Image 1 (cartoon, one colour):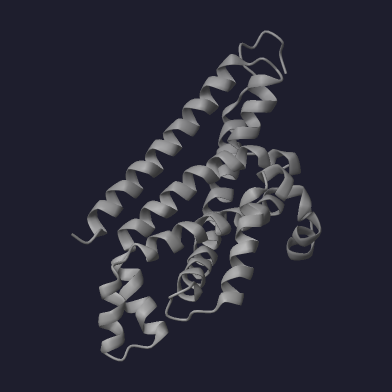
Image 2: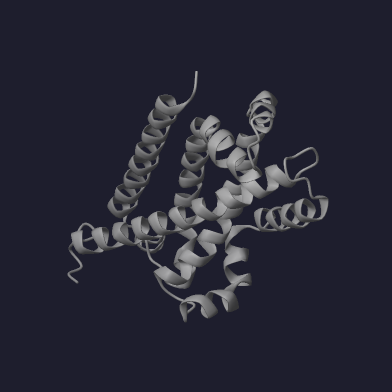
Length: 222
């Protein structure tokens, strides 16, 4: 590469990194949201006074969620490397990063979903019970629809946090915009590369926040 270039960043490098970030973000968010909704639902239903009150299940699952959330992402990433290799057959690359990203965001969304479901007025559950609804029906036909605006905001917050975590995924060779900012903007003192990646991350965060807030406002029950 010529030394008289004013930046080391090329379009190929940039769009490759952007694609890696979007892949990590999209796959981890979808998988994490599915798992997180399940975790949050179990936590809300099995807590004291819940529809399926079960202290043992609530304490065990809640403790696991708290354990995962208490670990910085970089430590979680390293700690579950054997599990990552078991699932995807490798400990480097985008898919190796998606595993710990999914685990982290599932626990985070699980707590947010639990809080969203607990915000639903108790009268809704009592009305459902009076109509003979089963626990599954109470969850799917009453609690989740009532909390959908709050749930959308929860996923939006999680997505923003996930973008931050993808920057650290470069430690397993996953690449991404954050890794580009570190390896080119910081380590190689490339000001343009740093500015380009920072602007891109800001646009991603603002775009996700706008879409999530707009959707939540539309679906929130008044």
